[in-house]
Image (cartoon, rainbow, N blue to C red; front, side, top):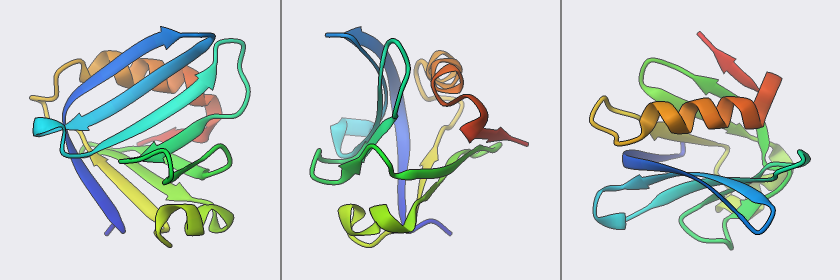
Length: 116
């Protein structure tokens, strides 16, 4: 069981100011998870609910499962995430733009994204 869990109602993929953003947002904008990377590649920033809870060295492993995304954070990032070690992003079939966001995230994360 993840330390933090959000159930995405919709997802977004956008490019702005030299960065690609992939976000997953809960219903009524109650919470979100955001991945950000320069368009020419490089470190992936990950944050949950607030920029204060983010880091560009946070991702140890990201797994795509039938339920959604399971994210294991690096031990070094734990203080930035309220000492959480893992984040689950539930992606129900009703999540708007889910497939587009997962495809963009797959391109962004490359081998860091595990499927199965």
